[in-house]
Length: 336
Image (cartoon, rainbow, N blue to C red; front, top):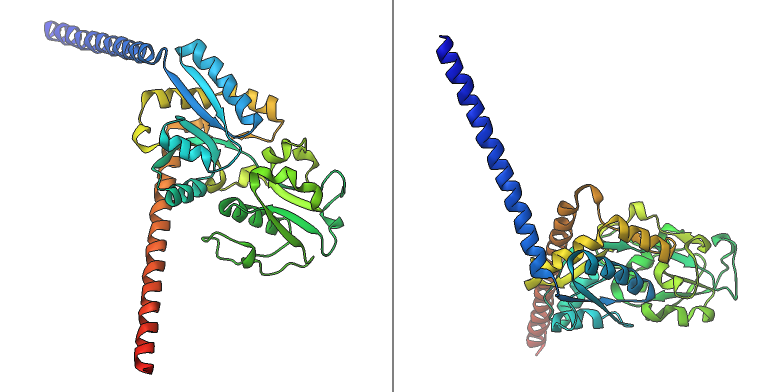
């Protein structure tokens, strides 16, 4: 009996030893694979399309870290217009950009026949309402009837800005939150505000011609308007995933190790620090630290779900339009 007991103990020790050695071997293999992967990336060049000086400064800091840690050469290419970064991405002039909402990415891709996808969240930039420094207001209570309000004309940006104007109590909108709002959807405008639609990227060139303006904190910051000076500022904790800025790439590169390495370095504490230092709260991190992998997967899946939904709506609208035209033709034939 004692002999059997001894054999059993020896057997268990042998199994434990084998498991330990296997684990060590696996750890060594994983370490070797990572080292091999990093070596493959060394010397590679990656170009990010940036929008504005803040975006450029943040990415340049990420580039320094990538060069030091992995030998990746990160370059930035600036754009002043909102469609160009996506077209440049599709053409391969740049490798990624991080300036847009998910719905904006969908609309641009559809309108320009692009095949781009988000693979993670980058940053948030709250929408605020300011008064020009030449015509200061203390609060929204000082808004007078007939004042001129500058607002972005880009469809997706306009939609979110109208939602924020409603939350600020300046207008009311329909309860249907699934559609993209336009100026024509405003249900009530108690102050009879006069809306002036301008190009979002050029907003700060028009603010002195308005009495109040609504835009992103990052855009306002270009003319030294600070978040704390806003008459109203969107609550980032309540921001919809639709309005977080995404890290976008070409669909055929979404699993590219180089792309992943760049995104991994962007979504770090070091980036949060430089973001706060450079923008003073105008840009906020949009990724989820608790489970970045799941969060990044969600960014992609959220886009695919939105794409499927919008494509279905467009097809349904097209069918309804055809049916309407058919009935009109039938009516004309009967009248003859």
